[in-house]
Image (cartoon, rainbow over all chains, first blue to last red; front, side, top):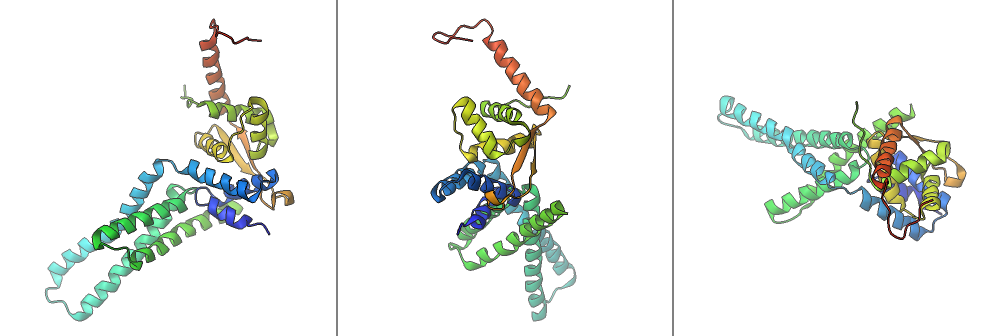
Length: 171
Length: 111
């Protein structure tokens, strides 16, 4: 039983799923052993990791905070203008509102990362998550599960874009 | 006149191999042609990264073929050199010839 799907999935971290499938097809046609296949996959990933990726990952890292920051500023202005004595209900709505805004922002950032570099979007997501964890660790002196959870909507956004693009190509 | 992108040595080799193989140019045949004609056996990763870069420079185009059973149901990715690709490789070769003209390298015999 060959694990072709796993090879395609791993390669699709650095290239589009269609191209990853073609590369694995070449390996199968070449009749490579499992060890040589995985060595070739490692070589692909090493070649694909160009310095440009780091810049894109940094851009993605800051992009995820852009929309929530704008909303935060608007909320702060609104608070000082209209709400002087906030109720407990206000803080509850604000908390869930803030989480919702961040969720939308993460999905949108994931989607845009997919558009920036469709071939390497999953690797970019991984870099952004690592940056999130580093930033979280610097702020809280620990890497907690909350930070990792935010990578799920980020990944979902990219998958939505990749699926839409694949469906478009098939059509 | 539009600018032709400059080419690295391996990019030239890949372009020439695609041109030599013709219609059936995909990963396996391109690699085999390079190995046969130059004695170099490039890693698949190096070859595909170069081909992707050439596609980004619009010097080659690629299309996916139909999946075949002998490839585990995976398609072939066929490559074709564009007009800009032909121009780029021709320009690079002209530069080499021009630099080599009248030059005699010790111990190297020319046909």
